[in-house]
Length: 265
Figure 1 (cartoon, rainbow, N blue to C red):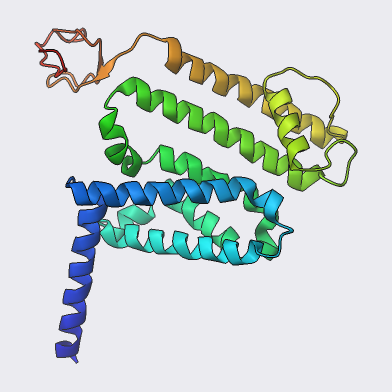
Figure 2: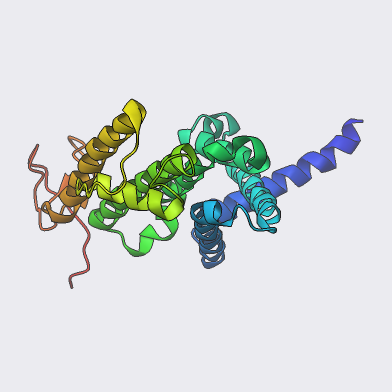
């Protein structure tokens, strides 16, 4: 029995080594593989955003289950590529992806929670996988911070839109479809308050209040990343300070001489 298991274990080890090379390697082949995975992820996110508009089409379920297969395959591959399966399974990003997969496998029961699928956008743009692939070409703190802040804002917009759509569309005057729900979310989030679409009852008022407060907070966060003084990320060997001015010679916290790499000749 052990003789039969040995080739299987060797095959699993080889598979894990290959996947680890593709998901975490720095060679041109590994980078191309990760770029392809990211492009697929972006296509999946586009489907998640458009799902409410496609739900009544005859091919929706076929696409839904195909997307579930792709996402399950990606999750399994990432699990095998991880050095510690237990550590990987504890990551909140993995939980979000597992929940997204569950909504895809049971669209009839969990479609009212399907608006949470757009969290995949947040997990993608906050992952080390993305920044070790795309971000290495834009190795600046500003690009990363702006992208993450913008992705959080966009994710919030579509989550609120999906919640308003599933909770109020077709039941109350004004919210007749997904576009109206998106319009209400943007108008409320920006505190424009045209008043042509108003969610009824105390529940609707609470949603509007949360949307306005969270929207202002996310806008401020995005503005901070856009307009505050730019700093580079470089670890000080003495005090551990991570952020410094681009032309810093000494660490402002402890005075240690720095050697921050740059592109100047």
